[in-house]
Image (tube, rainbow, N blue to C red):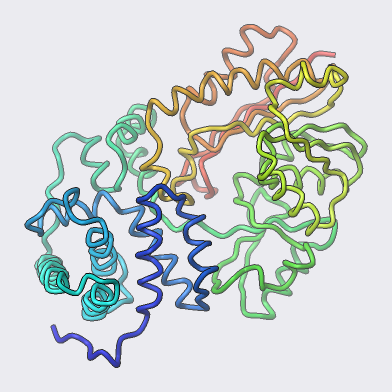
Length: 445
């Protein structure tokens, strides 16, 4: 394999930015925040921006699988590699094994040049040798040796923690668990929610098509559009500044309508930041009603206000408070709201494709710690619901302990509630989107 001459090297800036994102995530940053910050500091456009995003997110998703190749090919185990070298090798391996449109020579050559440009020049021969070894293995059709245990095998294949694949098999069986695990590594669709106060899906689709951005309707989401092909900063797309649309996954778009919100109603969004569902509720009630967006973080509530302002929404009132304490701090709200949305803090196990680093943060212990908070929110917000009112409990996780088991426990102790409907979507389902759970509860009149 002949390496490209230095003058032919392209995309080095994208690879360096992706490498810096990997370093930031390894140091504790969230992937989306690290990527946004890196792109703000050194803006990339068009294909370069897309390449940096795909490299960073892809290497984070496949971290376990890439480490296994380092263990197989390197003299030093992955976990003992210098972090800067480990993540640089991840980028090279990811290109070789997962990005068909990048020639192998470019993957190797740019990785070597990246090593030289970030102070790892003395390790450039190591990078070259290991990636060439990976290429030989790929061309020979060699792969990783998979464990005999089904959960461990799926965990390695799909780059997930063992405990998670074991649970997926327990919940769904081996075949469907593999479908869910595979979906966790797919690039998620980019879904838009059209602001019905200002535009129609047809108008937005036409405006985007005029700049060569193709879309299609999303089944089950009357205001939804899936973007089929895109590049660049979406904040520069037609209609963004005018508030014609927001970015919102299709599964999340299906939550607010479950409340059956009507103009003039008093509505509480108890865990509102960053405001996607609060603004959707406002759009559904024609911005006519009393809509409180509550969140513990005043900083995150600023995003709610900013989103509402861009969309031209005035009915949303932001309140920085602990939703679990509203019954005591706001006694005037007893029986006040006709509709309450609890978009509960959760493990986010349904959004691993969208948040690739979450799989390396979540632990069974962390999930266990969330359960009392979720139960407390349900119990403490119930007194704020008016007779005949509707409450929706929603999460972006697929863990039964956070979902159906929470609702079953509430119903056992709350005779004034009835369960109107309950649904669980999974990554890899035919309708697409994140894994989401929702339950609609009705309070007797």
